Structures are given as structure tokens and as C-alpha cells.
Image 1 (cartoon, rainbow, N blue to C red):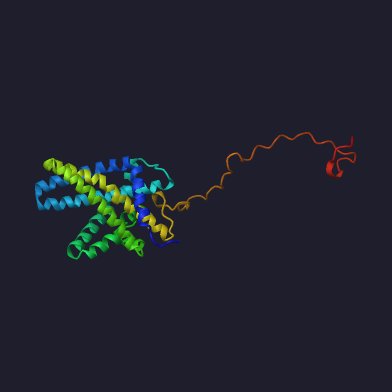
Image 2 (tube, rainbow, N blue to C red):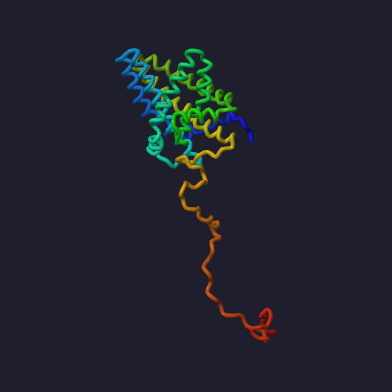
Length: 281
């Protein structure tokens, strides 16, 4: 088994899912980031520097919540189709929303400090904590457990994971730059709209990358990824009754017994004659 993830395959899977589920991904992103963007804009306009800092925290919370929802979506797609509605995806995150928000704030602050001070430590933290959201949503861990579990999964795959992060960053930066130029032509209102639109379009890429990385890392480590709700596929939940025997394939079900037919004619030797062959003509 290959112990390294394939960066190209991860990126390809990200955009395959994006294209197939664009309606759900963009619709949810529009709701989340429109609200977060408006709140952040109002805080920045009314409170200055403090408002900008509060707006940054709001953005982190929105991104973290959205990432958790996307993880639930990717997990639901593992059987080849999406069974859950958008509301179900939000509900899948509701039970861990506090942990997601706390983890997002802690990771954002620590990575930010690392990037500002020495850059390299920030990049290392960004890499080893790349899959904290999937861990929280699917493995139901706390803050400390999610950070250590993410580091364990990324171990021995640091460079490929960092490569995925760099590619996603460059794609999102390019899209944001283009939309920013377009928005600048519309003045302050245009810039706000462009910023929100950039968040809506680019957010699915980073969130999908984290989810796809999580399943890819578990795959190369030979781990069975948890199914929907955190239960491993094919493994009954604790206390569940034993699985029923497999059904026969269609068309091979046992048919009702036919009514008894008349006994065949006996040979001259009587009922005890071997073979019960019919009498000679």
C-alpha cells in the first residue's frame, strides 16, 4: 500500500465534488458568508481596529462552521450519492459546533502568531492541523484530541499535505484578486460585495480539500474511515442486533413446494423393487 497521498488526485477530487455539488456548496456558503461578511463590515466601520479584529474572529467562525458542513457532505457522498438535504448537513454539525468554533479560533490565532513572528512555525502548524475539522465532525473529539489526531494523520505526509494547501491558496488568491479588481470599480459597496462573493466562491475549495485530505490520509494508513454519524461502514453499532443472513440474488428465491404428484407406476417386483422402474412394454 502506498504510504503517500497523491496531491493531484486530491485536487482532482476536490473539483469533481465542487462541480457535482455546486448548488449545495455555493448555496450554503452564500447564507453563511453573507451574514458573516455583513457583520464583519459593520464592525469594521463602527469600531475601527477593534471591529476589524472582531470581524476576523467572525470570519474564522463562519469558515470553521462551513468546513464542518462540507465534511458531512463529503462523508455522505462516499456511497456515490447525496442522501442528506442541506438542513441535515447543518444538523450534522450542530452537535460539535462549539468545539468547531473553539478549535477554529485557537488554530487561527496560533497559526497567525506563527506566521507573523517566524513564518515557518506558522506553516508547520497550518500543515499538521489541516484536518482538524473532519476529525471533530466525524470522530467527535474535543479540542486537544482533534489537534493531536490531525497531527497523527498528517505524519509522514507533511509535504504532500502542504502541497495541497499551497495549491488551494494560490487558486483562492487568484480568484479573490480578480474579484477584488472587479469590485474596486464599484467603490466601497462594490468592494464589500466582491469580498463576500470571493468568500462564497473560494470557501468550498478549502473546505473540500480538508475533507478529501482526511479520507485520503486514512486510506494510505490503512484505516477504515467512519461512515455517516461516525460509524465505520459494515460495522454494527454497539448493542445492535446481529446482521440478517444475506438474501438470495433476485430470481433465485426459494419457491413454494409444489403439491405432491401421483406416485409413479411400480415395477412388477412391487414397491420394494430397486429403482421403481416402469414395467416393460
